[in-house]
Amino acid sequence: MSRRQRNAGIAVAVLVAAALVAGFAFTFAPKAASTADGLAAKQLTFPLPENRRDGLRNSFHEKRGANSHEAVDIMAPRGTPVYAVEDGRVAKLFNSVPGGKTIYQFDPSGRFAYYYAHLDRYAAGLAEGKELRRGEIIGYVGSTGNAKPDAPHLHFAIFKLGPKREWWKGEAIDPYPYLANLAPSPG
Image 1 (tube, rainbow, N blue to C red):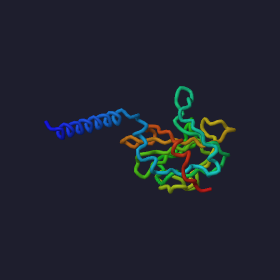
Image 2 (image 1 turned 45 degrees about the horizontal axis):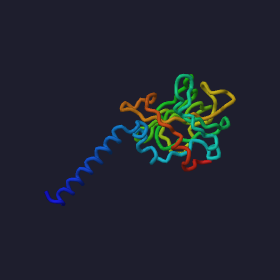
Image 3 (image 1 turned 90 degrees about the vertical axis):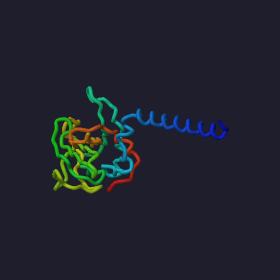
Image 4 (image 1 turned 135 degrees about the vertical axis):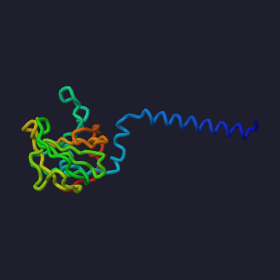
């Protein structure tokens, strides 16, 4: 075997080893990393007026009873407008014990759901199936559901939907990184 053939064989072995390592790293990458595929590229609009960004805090991993919060809370005065974070459609308007007045919005691809909760009221004309535009007012901050009456805020969550596109099911994604340094919304 010539030196050139031996070097070529070593190069192939190194490439195969690198591919195996890369495949191993990809196969065992944390679920959250693959979950948010494409979410960063959407450049979500901040869901409240820009001057409310100081009310954003990362509470995604905090406990609420026995469960993780799996959302961010953005403190704001009652009646502050809430904006659609991107284009999409209203999948469900729902009044629940924990979330109060809520909106489930699907993104245009139907891969992600955006959840807005504790709303004081919905915007005029908002209805299930309505097509939304990024930055459109969809509701107003409140403290409905299990929120403290003296602490109005927007509870905002993102879910990657499963193949059945069920509005109430999905894999939670931490919204904080997608809202912390994004383009300003109207207001």
